[in-house]
Image (tube, rainbow, N blue to C red):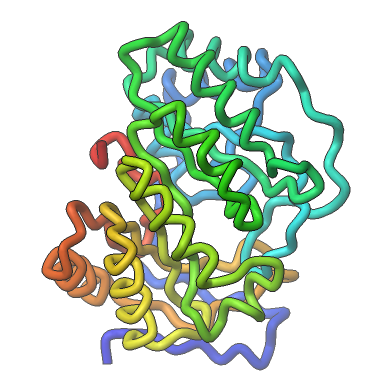
Length: 291
C-alpha cells in the first residue's frame, strides 16, 4: 500500500508527519521584505491565515497570495484554519494597497484570494474586480490569478470578476462529492463544478484544487478529476491535507509521493493542461508556472 493510515480515534493527538514533510523554515531578505510590506500596508495573506507549510519557500522566492475582504470568513469548513465569525466592514482602500504591494515587490504573477463574505449581495465580487483593476493600473506587466469563492451561485457576481479578464480564474473544489456536505457544509459540490464551467464559457483559463487525506478514496478523487474535466477545467492542483490545529479535522491518511505522481499522470492523460501534485502542493504553489 502506498499510503499511511492514521488512527483518528484520538483526535487530540496529532500524528507524526512522514519524513517527506520536512520543511526548511528560514527567513531570507525576500521573505522579510514580503512580511514587512504586508505589515506596512496592513494586508493579509492566505499563506499566514491558512498556516501554509510552503510559506518560507514561496516568500523567499518572492511569491505570496493576498487575502482580501478581511480575514474573517462567514463559513466554517472543518479543515481550514481561517477564522470564522462576523466579518468587519469592507475596507475601501484595500484594493489600492494590494496594488501597491504588488508594485513594490515587483511581482510578475499575483494571486488574489478572499474569505467568504456570504453577507454581501455579490459575495465580494466588486472588490475582486476593483483589486484586479488597481493592480493592472500599477503593474500592467503582472499576470493575475484570482482564487474566488462560489458567490453562492450568483452568476452576475461571477461575470463581474470574469469581465476583468484575470489570466487565471481559480475555484477550489477541495474534496470529493461524498464528503462535501460534512466538510464544507455551506458549500455545494455541484455548484462549484458548475461555477468553473460557467467561467470557462466566459473565456477564462480555469483552475481548481483537491486536498487528499480527509477520508476520501482514490477512486472518489479520480471522480472529482473527471468532473472537473467535464467542466473543461484547465489546471489542477492536488495536495495532502495537514491538520492545522487540534480543533480541526484529523488527518485520515498520508499518501506517499508516488501516489501524487500517479495522479498527476492520470490528470494529464484526462486532458488537464497542467497538474501540480505532491504532498506539499497547495492551490497557489508554483502558481507563476501555471499561467
